Image 1 (cartoon, rainbow, N blue to C red):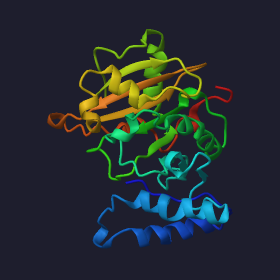
Image 2 (image 1 turned 135 degrees about the vertical axis):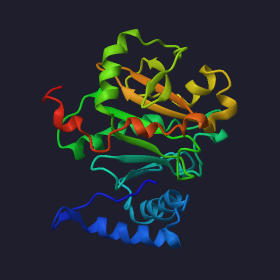
Image 3 (image 1 turned 45 degrees about the vertical axis):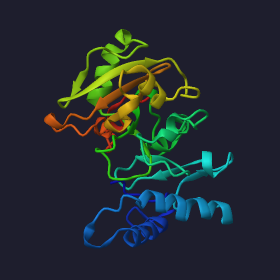
Image 4 (image 1 turned 120 degrees about the vertical axis):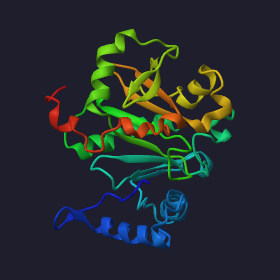
Length: 268
């Protein structure tokens, strides 16, 4: 489950005033007996971030609230407490997840573009410049998630996944690969996209239109988007495979410890 905490002034041993407040809020939102509340993210977005922005021009506990086009088309950026660099981009409309028909409706907002833009927060938390190919976006499948509000994970990609994509980038096609690539025994089909920032490119639609049968079972798919240097992206699509214990949680291709922030040479 995503655990969330807003950024704020640090004090003491790396803690923040807002971090303490968020932990208290998290405890209030978490039901008894440690049961995971699948609506926690929605309660934070709809019950705290959006009202705070509307009434006080303050997005807390979120980092950003963008409702310039209205709440029905807006999104927030929220710091996840897991990892130093992980953020979540979440619609301000009620959208349960990848399976929601609203994502494929005519004129639906493209949440991937603001998710890619939100990488600047990852870079800021990393404390050093990071290249495009160090950043990944991910949405888990319906069985592979704990929250029933769409959220796009924004964080560093795993070094081994980056290495694979660097090695094979020249062979990637603008059509979905016919064969799957295994990572940790989980199969992913790959697609190369020529775009600078994902504006006008929606991976949900690429999946629904490009892989036969995907539109009818969107909830069983996971999507991961990784930047390419100097331009473009690789989109990876994974499907639930119960026989192999694969719940299609594409977030597994991310590194919430962001090893690349420590290992990449400066300027790379």
